[in-house]
Amino acid sequence: MKTSTVIAIVLGVLLSIASVAGAAGYLWARGTAAPPPAPGLPTVWPTRDGELPHRVPMPSGEMLVAMPGDSSAHVLCQALSDRHWQALLGGTTLREVRGNGCHLVTGSLDVGVRLDNAPATLSAPQAVTVSGHAAEVESSGTVNARLNAHLVDEPPSGRVHPYLRVDITRSAVTRPDLALDDLAVSIARDVLDATMAPGPGLPARSRDGTIAMQVTEPVPGYGIRGAPWPVVSWQLCTELAKAMGTSPSAAKPKFDGRCTVRTVQAVLNDDVTPRAYPDTLAGRPALITSDLVAVKIADDETEELVFTGTGRDLSALAGSVLPALLGR
Image 1: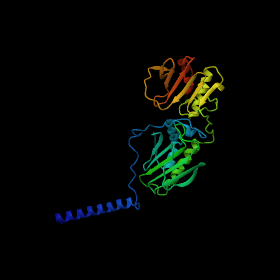
Image 2: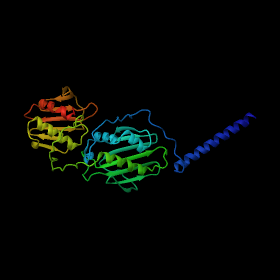
Image 3: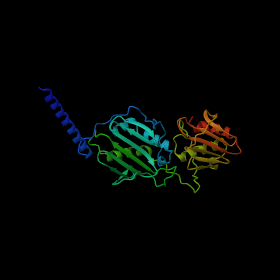
Image 4: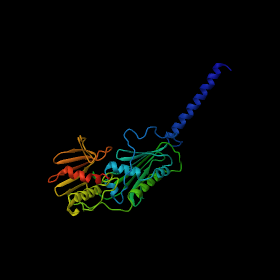
């Protein structure tokens, strides 16, 4: 066979392959052909802006919506066991906390679950009920789906996030029988069943944010870490009143993670401007002055517990309550 003939045959085959590949790409763009193969799991995990979830106590009732953003993300990631997530998403699942939400990936799915102050804007939503909560879901065929669930009637704020949002993107159809809108509903249902089991409602607030006192012992192993804001306040009040030798009824907790007992106030802050902690208190980095004690409560978090007031040795008082408040 002549060289020119061989070359002609090879070129013809290559052109045929290119033609088929082009047609397949065109059909996939129009939604009439199978999508490209799944990219597989990431080789680096967690991502640059993510962190692996750590164990946190599960809330109940309506307390899920009143948690610090970072804590709520860890709760959402840990709401279901690894085996449960894999069964739900259909394969090996990686989890990370990223941007105050839980981010999950499989070989073909990218899923985001988070609490928010507003629902996602949906163009053609379908009304559904998820674990007793009004919700809406929409799906654009085999590619993605989004869901909003309205969890409480409380107005949104920096301390209350009334909406659960689920976002799903699919890179390959490995389970043709799986509808993404159904998957979004299943994710929301299972997460809410685990984190909003029958329990307390959000406490009523007075105009200045004060809530009724409830004696609440810190959870061993956790303390105030990972707790909803009202529960943080109750724990602070319980321990301060005990250390100051006064009745819990003299304590004034507020909804937002603070408590006042007589002339002393303790407050948990989760949005702290970085500062130096030249001292140590109860084994934690601290800043101690005559009228302020600030304690960094965990190495891997930005939360800070601050004591202010008069008439007491704040350093001694803070040091006496810190072990319980840190879950020791």
